[in-house]
Amino acid sequence: MNNRTSCPVLLMFFIAVSFKAAPVQAAPGDVSASFDSPCKYPSGLATDGRNLFVADWRDAIIHEVDSSDGRLIWSFDAPTLKPHGLTFAEGKLFVSDDHTGRIYALNAETGIVQSTFEAPEKKATGLAYADGVLFILADGKIYRVLPEDGAILGYYDVPHRACRCLAHDGRYLWVNNRIKDEFYMVEPESGKVLAILDAPGPHAAGIAWLDGNLWNVDFQKRKLSRIVVTDEPMYRLSDTRQARVEHVWTFSNYGPGKVTDLVLNVALPMELPNQKLLSEVEFFGRLRQPGQDPETDVYFPIEPTAKLRDRWDQQCAIFDLYTVPAQTKKILTYAVNAEVSAIRYLIIPEKTGTLQDIPAEIRQKYTVDGSHYRINTPCVQETVRKIVGDEKNTYWIARKIYDFIIDSLEYEMVGGWDVPEVVLKRGSGSCSEYTYTFVALCRAAGLPARYQGSIVVRGDDASVDEAFHRWAQIYLPNYGWVPVDANRGDAKSPADQARGIGELSNRFLITTQGGGDSEYLGWGYNAFSQYKADGYCKVEEEHFGLWEPIKDSDEEEATTNPAAADSGGACR
Image (cartoon, rainbow, N blue to C red; front, side):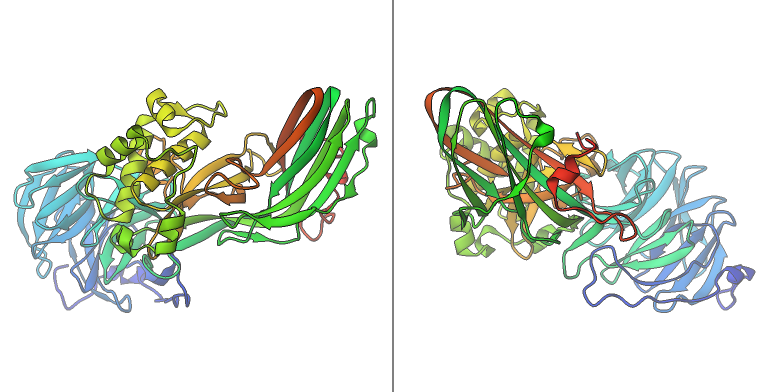
């Protein structure tokens, strides 16, 4: 098997070569080329900077493949019965054995072993190399060792318990997740996950980095794939859903006095990279008198008094609702059909530049103070100095603040909107308090930040949202506004902690983008009301959201009448 001029019988598995042309604008995770694996049971992948090397786990053979066309160049016997991880280091091909726990260094031209040493743990499944350090993934840890004898330099936990393979791109470590079918870009010194990429197949068995692309060999599909990492746009959309979403606002005056000068301001959803509006926003009103049966409520179209934009360019519908007598309830609903997608940015820290790379008008507008931020207080100023230090890179400024918050706070769904100094001293907060604290610390550090608010899918596609959700956005050069949800990042594993930066699921209809102290929304989102009372009034105000999937064309057409949606009580 060591004759470099011949190809083994295993060539029967190497049948057709098929390339997929990269899209004009390829998103991170797109497959730009693929061809068949040279073997049926691939278990490791490496590159010498020109060609690819694939380990066959069952037959203990290593195959060299031309990366330009998938042609099998030659095959040779592996130095162990169960080859798994592969990497090139210092001119030698290193092979790990997940059965005996040994690491072998061999000459890839001849297949002859030149040295061997014992791995830190027996289940050594992944190998990578950079700057004189060999990385070994074994039994839930990533070890940094000396390639000549395996002396341990340091180690940290894998991003997720299901991680198996490693690669190095010259700056960052890449790690796969076998269960979630994801790749993680990892800071190699600390093990911190910086970005997440979807795998193209269900069983990534090996990864390698070649010419600016991540390569993957899949055990189940038996395919070698070249995966786009950096291209335009720097985000990926997935899991698109179409739904009819309602926002329902109710205002009850139990008296005995009357409410006057009632004004309701409603934040209007907008077009965003991950959100398309499929219909105009329609408004409906209801008025319920004392003793009236809710089933007899009649919906009637209502138009806003005005549509105005606040200081943050958020469009709001303004409703002058005037007087509400005692024992009366006013109800206002808006409905819109929307298409929402999950979005995930792949952020390369060195591409985000410094604060000076941010347009001056954005820096000036989104670093101002506010009554719920209090960025000039000693507490906020001292905290941000301690966190950020002399960091200049915009991603790392945000990441250090993000990590501080998820380490310092515990989520508590209390609906509070206290200021950052109180939240930090208390050590807990609601999603809004996580957001205010993160935005305040970013602004104090000179990094533009704001927030988004939404109506949320709660479980089933047809569902009711009575809590809503808010998170932050930061402005990064070359990326623009990127979502940051420190509340979501409050997780155990490094992989799940990273999901709060640059990632949103398809569960949100985003209604609001703001920075606080809005002329029409104050510090709230979705909607905000103001009124006066003539005499004592017991008032109750309620907001909730309703989600309903848009039906397929062969089913009953989705209605735009909220009364029809309420009938049957499916969402209540």
